[in-house]
Every structure is written in structure tokens, then in C-alpha cells.
Image (tube, rainbow, N blue to C red; front, side):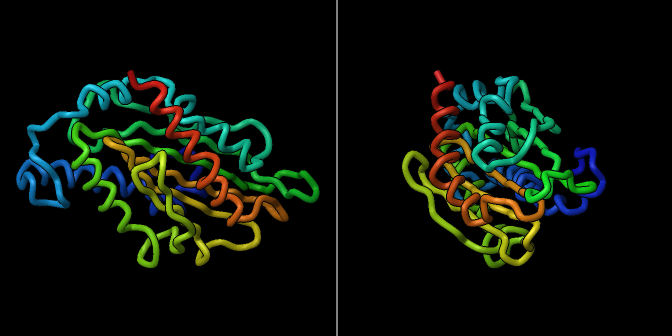
Length: 235
């Protein structure tokens, strides 16, 4: 993520899924126009069954509120008030990875002493990519999902699978990179015409919930809430 203001986190977060999302979304969209119906199971490029809904989602100017990101921070027990680092959405649809995005950050603390960690930061990142067809969304979902799990750059361990209200989805944690002071969890999901990616890094000594509990919160609490929030806004 090159648009973040904190140099210490910039290097760590270059491998995060939303950065991959934009690149892969662009490649999928471009190639679907060249090879309609043949790449990643994509359908004919002229089928715009969800274009109106995609335009509506991308018109929302309050991405962080629409995606209820701070509410996830409360569920995760992150202390204090978050700082909004990124809140963006294009005004209209294009085939070049049309994303709505929110990133919020919290100061990390030592949970035993309630003292701030020097240069410590916890963050939540939520990215939604709506597409004009369900096949385009599915193609991007499958491509992005390939960056997770055993071969993933960051979230290397599968934790759980998502179902209703989502079409499908997966939740991951990072056993490889996590330690006692950093807890990582992520999710990727699809619903009809849009794909979502969520990442959370909770930093701070001696803190709860655990990484596994954060992943459970994603599965059982935030993901259903996020789906309901998006769907309730689509006319």
C-alpha cells in the first residue's frame, strides 16, 4: 500500500491482498475483453446484468461507514478512536479494478499496562470491488484467492470457510508471521457481483482477543454484518 503515511508499516503492507486485488482485478478485466467467456470462467463482456448496482456501490462517499469498519475494530477490542487513513471510491464504473476502500489505524498498546507501544499501530483494511457481471466477480475472486493459503505472501493458514449470506468465502490467519505481540487475520468473499477483502493486524503486548478469536469474529460477526450493510444500501 503505497498511499499510507507511516513508513514503518509501508514495507510490511506492500504484500497485502488489497494491493494484489487492484492488479489482478485490472488484469482480469482487461483479458476478459480480449478472451470473452474463456478466461477464469468469465461470461460475455457485453452482459451488464449488475452494472447499475455496481455504479451505485461506487457512488457511496462514506466508504468507512458503509463498510462498518470501526464496528469491526470495536468487536476486535482495539483501544481508542481510530484514524481514517484511506477512504475512497470512484464516482463511476470502469473495468480497471473499481474498488471502494477503507483503512483505519489504531495506536497499539501494552494491554497489561495500557501504555502505548512506541511506533506501534493496529489497522483494519476493507476493500470492495463491484463488477458489472457475476462472472467477472467470480473470475476476480478465484484469482485473488490464489494469493492466500500455503502459497500466500502473508495469510498462509486457512482458518474457516464462509457460506450464506455470502456466495462463498474463506478466512485466513498468519501462523508464519504472527508472534505474541501481533495477531493477523483476513477474509476473501464473493456475493453476486462484488468481491470483498478484509485484513486486520492487531498489535500490542499481552492483548486479547487471540488471532484465532479475531478470525472467528470475522467469520461469525463481521462478515454477516458487512454483507447486510452493503445489501441494505443497494436499491
